[in-house]
Length: 210
Image 1 (cartoon, rainbow, N blue to C red):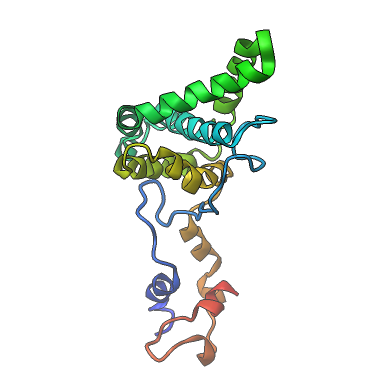
Image 2: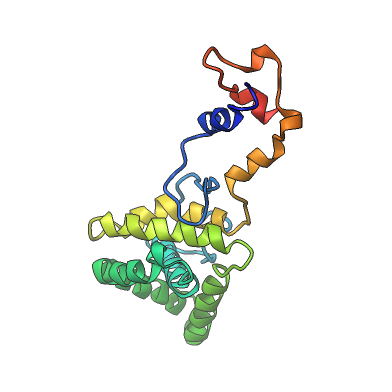
């Protein structure tokens, strides 16, 4: 009897899955909000002002959505191309302001070489967001963030970047479907101890994890 209901028991024990298209149960890529000058979030701008740090973060998230529009077309349900184009239209004023602010940072700090260094910065930003082995996680995450950005009022794209940029970075680390956890609980490993089952015959979480 216990073996017969194990699939339902495991489903009940698993956290409720977030909406996903490329996973049965999406890996958890969430993270704490950022300012933009934390290591590994955006390409560093030494000596940047708070406004320049925020602009760098905004422009980096835009780059992430741009990369997703280019690399994630194998999954049209994510609508990464439509999302990106609409984000550019809806948040264009804020994005343009961020671009100008980052450009002015290089003008201020690099003198005559500012354009070359600005171009190198742009290349590094794109290269740092391109992935092959973690493509599913990145595309799923970028697709969801694009939809969130569409619901954000104009002038609030920076808030989306602050809240979600760490998730973008986390999604660039390959992770498997959380449902794959169940493969480690074969019938031979199903716990038969009564303490592992509740009154409704469901496997307790601490037992299937252990």
